[in-house]
Length: 237
Image 1: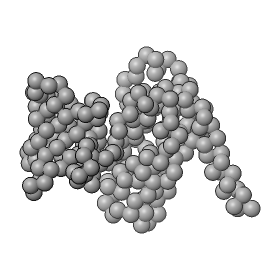
Image 2: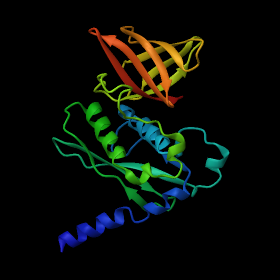
Image 3: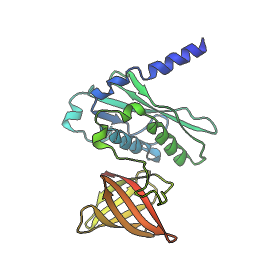
Image 4: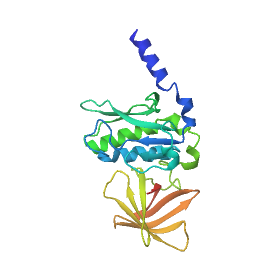
């Protein structure tokens, strides 16, 4: 009997997923209920970035809304994150609801065994969102995809083990890129005569070139006499 009940829960978990294409907007809370502070570990911003990645016009509940977003409470989906962590494993699931609090779909459970809370929560949330095939097929997703993870520009170049998702802030000389999880890592970009090519410096250590190819951005530099190519996802703040 327990097996039958579990199967029914799995089936009904995405029973309304076909209706997600009727929604263009998404609302992410500024604080998840299982956390003590707003945007702790930058998880709420990360959730917002993923919903933007999947094509939704997304706001957090502490931001000013556009007129189209605010005019109807039922024109949007509401994002929540459920914490099912145990003593040794961080477990997070993403839940998508409508304005009547009906669960439209639930992601697979993202897991991490990292001891550091910030890293564990970030990795688990990324895994949960990356598993969300229903959102990946959202009708607007191809228009706003950030291409978070991919292969390097050339196969023989080593790809960095860390996924890069940066927030871009305009400066007088170009842009400053800040990692979305608030780590103290920045890439400073200096404009050139080509709008798709920048001179770049990472943490004042690695100097190289930041450029766009086939609508995607790459940062290339030399480390220990080897050429490194990072495929970088950029969100304009």
